Length: 92
Length: 143
Image (cartoon, rainbow over all chains, first blue to last red; front, side, top):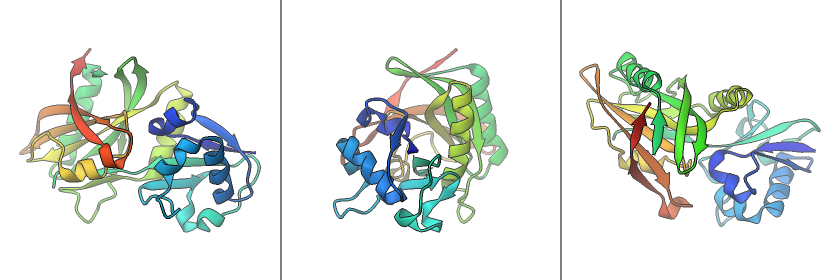
């Protein structure tokens, strides 16, 4: 099993759980298991075309999966996945 | 409503003065207290927008993960973020809103004029998705 850390704005869709245990051999499988357990999460993580939203960062342990094999990145037992919406802005 | 100690408020304002004329940024840690967010500590962050730090900020998600992990050891959660506006008002811009995604969290903005922190305002990101999100003024209770 893999643990997915849920950021505060999305916990309302996971029954307020900050961590969800999921199954899956890849990051994509793990996220798929997450959204099947908590379907309301899906539209917040994915576009209508089924792609991860650009402001949703997914980390496997301490690595951004964009720089690994993206959703095909292999996950091992004991790994943790973090979902981190972007934090950015500016006065202009 | 944002509840914050004077020490933490002064610290985030001072951060904006130190990074002037660039935008500073950081994380507010604490707990949700009913309808309010109570800040118990801050975590300064680096601004990864080296291309335009005078009017843009971005927090590295990897840094946020570390901050979150350390905060959880202390029983703290992420309740918001802060940044500064060098020589610009302490009000959110269209960019601030477009880049805000942490619903239910506070976004604190400090205007820093000629190197001195002037006004600090806080805004709650309301709504439930990108299409209906708003940054709404919220009171700041200094404890």
